[in-house]
Length: 173
View 1: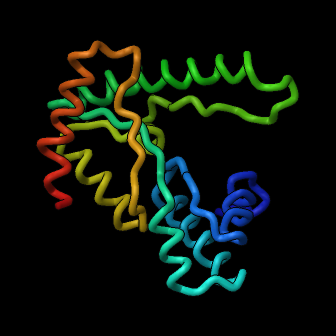
View 2: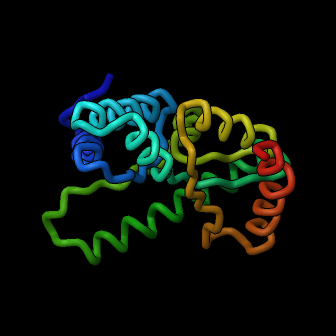
């Protein structure tokens, strides 16, 4: 259920009213689809043409953490720990640097598999390909991928990037 009063939706609508591209984090694919539809509908209702709206959507991005491994199990275990570590690092930095009354919370991913998929694309090349395909079908045209968690050894990060480059990207060409 979409709560239009929710901060993210308010910001999406504000950016759409002035025709500015947006940067979204991924949650549930259905929620992402709703956010993109809200953005598109708000642009049209604000007087932007279909061409201007499509252009702005083509310049919008979705940010997502990603970790690819040879197996789903390995990717989920390593990826979840790395993602949790990165979120904790960001939370501490914001806690130190943001004003005391700044109203932001940083979500912590759940070990629950369904919720993990909302926070992180992690898996074998086939699973990652499925998840990226789902995002594409939801209307995502540009992905900004965080693939270098500092808590993972360089070799694992390099392997993840290599698997993505060799096994996933070619499927979208």
